[in-house]
Image (tube, chains in turn red, blue, green, cyan):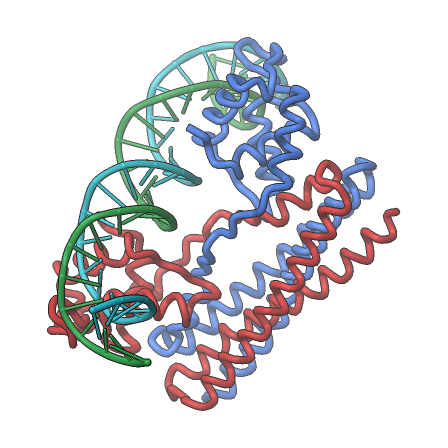
Length: 178
Length: 178
DNA sequence: AATATCATGTAACATGTTACATGATTGG
DNA sequence: CCAATCATGTAACATGTTACATGATATT
């Protein structure tokens, strides 16, 4: 019980933007928060049930038979504000790319180059996706949320550009090694 | 069984640098890989036992009664090289800071500013730590590993600098909002 | 002698994904 | 009518942390 506060926060947050079904919560998180968050059905449905039991959300009849659209109650809004204010527990870092490069001597210079090139092209793809999201946001401005959503996109862009610069530098350094 | 390949990889990698006890493996990962990896005792000791059963590592009598120093066997070296070559399963992203900023409208501009300032000062501290690690590495160069270890430090530095620039930009943007 | 650090190990708990089962509705 | 998508839910599995129990050795 007491499903992860993080999951609770993500779900209450999604429902604070608009009422929706569990399925839609998952899609929303995948498509909108996808660059920095994720939740699976195995987390979402049990958490929705618990939130409802605790009176933080209410179910309305959805557009289909057997489907429910959930809405935040006033208590749910308060709970969301409360969770947002609690300190983030920093997830222990686990970066599989760095773990491999750290043992680059054993892995070999060629394989390291391949990893770096992959990392660079991943970052470039992310940059393109962020550009697309920016365009979407500009077309349909959710006034209150807009500036904050731009903040998170900007973070993704800064990180991606840093990754590209680092990969270029590192590829050059590896070339010099031979 | 079949403890996470990631954990296996981290432990075999640590032992490939030098033979050591389980306790030392944990310390090594905390202090040397700490910026991009972590393992707990609950993972390390069972994994060491399994690696030994599978003949990938060997135990020697440690300096103390009841303690074991583990060394890679030739099979262990092959296994490490094999694991390093396998594709990284990308851990689903979970960035609690971004999750909070995304709901910044509900959280409030003041609290967002505090989060950004904290993020900036964290990044500055990381930069200082990386500078210290660079100095240490320069004093005692592990010839073969050296260039690869620098790669991972450089990644941390690029990321930290990007975080600082992003935080500054975002703080300015939030100020304009009022 | 007391305290800190080195060292091993596990049980209880927390968290999270995957794969499956099930069925309604929509669009071609 | 058939396929894709919407929708709910759970059981089995995988992963990982925390807290505790235990004791040896080093340091002061």
